[in-house]
Amino acid sequence: MERAVLFEKEDEEYRQGDFVFCRAEEGLPYIGLLLDITSPTELGPMASIQWMYRQDDIPDAQLRAQEEQLKMLLLPASMEILFSTHVDPAPTESVMQKATILFAMSDVKDDGDALKDDELLIRFRVDTQDSVLSRISTLKDNQMKVQVDELARRYPYENSVGDVARPKSPLSLPSMRSHELHLIQQHHLHPQHQHQHQH
Image (cartoon, rainbow, N blue to C red; front, top):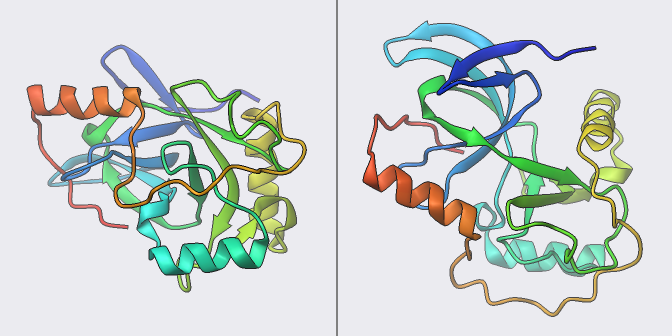
């Protein structure tokens, strides 16, 4: 079934189920999944967006403790993000461009080396109430499992076998990949209205 077109921007169609980068007030762009169009506000047309989390959205000590509990290291913050069910509206004007997010339903053997520069990986879901991580392959909530399974079919990471054996990377500041740096540079060159979304 073809996914519904929610809006168009700069000759690009944005469909239900597309991942997108959205402008942040500072730093790296937000990353979200387009769900639907909602009622417009004084900020203009609005989209309902399911927000993914970056590793630096989670307190570092909790993230390290979760790695110990899962007996698994996360890839660097510039390569791996976290699935969440946090949904908030945001102006469609804040959408910068589509994002390529890939789902690995099992461990990755290649340390994420098969990821292209403009791709990000998801292997874990974060509970936004307590910052607890769980593997997306072991979700118990049926509705969430159906959604993740569908996204994993649509956006699969092809090299998802084996265990990650990457040493921990420095986490003083989240590194950014060249495509995200380009997005930020473009925004500073052509500043536009900022939305107030926080997650």
